Image (cartoon, rainbow, N blue to C red; front, side, top):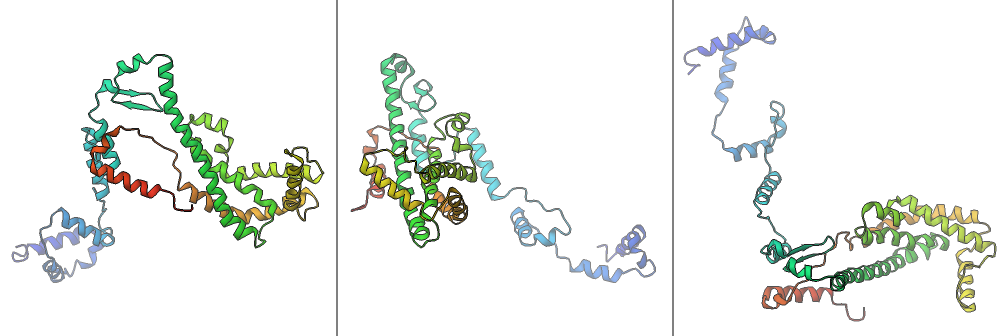
Length: 337
């Protein structure tokens, strides 16, 4: 309309007069070029989805002219929905185990919920727990504690067995047997790995400040822990090199066997300085393997562990029975293992 009425000429003239950078066009207004550019512009209607797609497709071009910001993406929208549902007490659950747990306890009345920190009871009335005075209450708590204590004990044994297995595969076979490292340096491997991994079992058993107090390794860096263990190795080796076997325990046959082991471990050393020099060289070779083993075993451990004790209602649920059968088939030891 402005083109046909020649109003466009006035607009162009005003722009040229207003902006210093367009002064070169004062004597020759580019009316034809502007009209040609305007006629090339294609105006179409777009909804929010169309605009979002265009922003993603031409983001580099748009950013030259506009400050482009995505107000809501899928991840943000997901968080908004989850928070909104959570505000109304509607948990947005996709985990089947969490769903089953929620179904089990969601209808439990407040007076039937007992929260004792390291253990929570659902479905047992507070009046019932009031009646458990003295020894009965102590026995209940000790029974629950014994479950986690047993699991932790066996978990420590599991960690130790995995360390022995992976050390044999990755240190003994790949590093020691080919002569890449000295037998003396292997002494740091098992203690280092056990101290690094066992802290995952005990870290939630005590408050943080007590964990670092009772388990010094929890506050040590990798290098600090290596140095700490190495100092103990050097002290023992120095005594052995001086002929001091007073710390060896066992019957005479055991002590003779241990002496032969010490002789093998210190083969080629004339002084403790030889041991320190060899260890400093070998630890550079060993460290990547230690990191690998720690990561492999660490994948099998979780600091936060929960035990849920249920009743026999699962026997009336076919889906639950199938899940149990599937789980049992997964954890059943392999024949000959």
